[in-house]
Length: 555
Image (tube, rainbow, N blue to C red; front, side, top):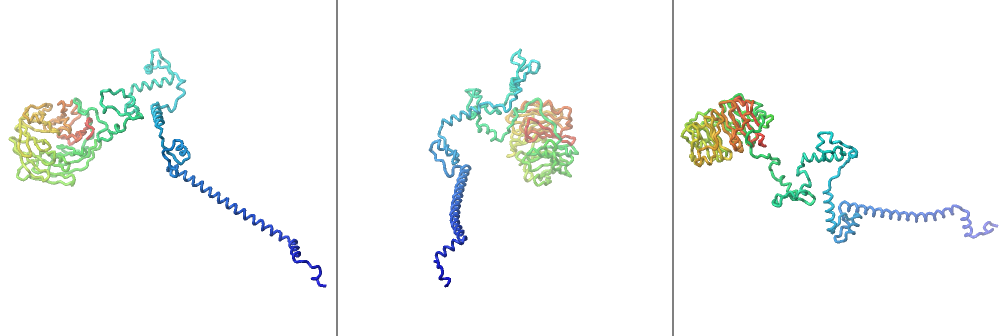
């Protein structure tokens, strides 16, 4: 019997039996089920993660908007004007709007009152010493503290009371300046009279400060912030101080015949018989030498800047003269003048407009030379010898005097004499000088007399001088008004210390000039700086003495 035929079993049963007998099959089925469950969990986790990321992005976006609104204002939620104050304040608290419109005028007025009260309150002390209350001081024992007593029998006071009385005493002795007090405008409405004009009253702002525009007016002008109380120079004593000599770096080997300040007030010219012209930068301390020019064939009798400051005219006892160009640093020799046989051109004057140079000639002639071409353009003839010249009326007129004792007035446009008159008490005129404003002129003679005239009155026929100065006893060689015609310097080269300064408004001589116990030697020439602050005196010892006049603020 075959094996197949014995005990036959169905295929299904066999298959089931095999499945039951094999344990790996059960395990695989369980793994499959677990895999399905894990996939669903992963998908759920991914969804949650995405949701969290979206939420984080939204929060970050909100934070960025909040920060932008904080920095740049309400960009994403602008303020809607016209809504109530509460909504605006809520929006401001959220950070979306930092500014809102306050329409309550009452609140604003109330806040202004509070601010005003706070500003008007006195400042509290930063630190208070507790020992002040405990300390007692006997102010009757010390002599210098007795003035702090309020009653005669008062002796012991507390430390705080002592400090307050000291402060009151200090304020009494040292009153405060009004400009330093912020509330000075508020306190003194009562100080102004009813009759005072509106311009005199100080405009006061709401916070207790004066109007800024009123205070800033002083800063809008180019005038000096500090001006001396006395604009006019006072007579009696002249305030001055001696400075380092103008030519201290290189004194002259001969006597000084010319000193003059340039129009910029910093450059000083000094020239003399050593045939050198020296230029110094004047600061009153070092007076540095800038340049020196040597002329081989011309001992200098006079050197002068043109008023425009471009050239220097140099002359000596020669029939020619020199011109030094400051810009080109070039020296030109000019002369003899065509048509004239002059032995000397040592005395000359330059017109204020820098157009004409007037030389003293022989036999009463005045030689007019153009400052541009350096050629003779005309002559004037006096009856006597000519000894001195002075320009007037911005160079349109010329004054001359000489051996006949008369003062001639010339019109240079027509080159005619329109007026002449005798200088009172003068036999030989030796010096002339006109003030910068042209109102006065001074005339000196060989007897030492100096007459000061009002020019309009002199031309009108009045021959008497307004003042006669008799302080010199020898020939007057030099006269010079300062820039504002308040000082007149008169000089004689024939006597030591023979230099006087006249206070022109009062026509009195300064009693403290020349300096006591100081030797001016033989003064030869003098000049004032354009601003009046410096005065330079050249003497026969080859020095240029420099002085500071304290009345004048500028050189």
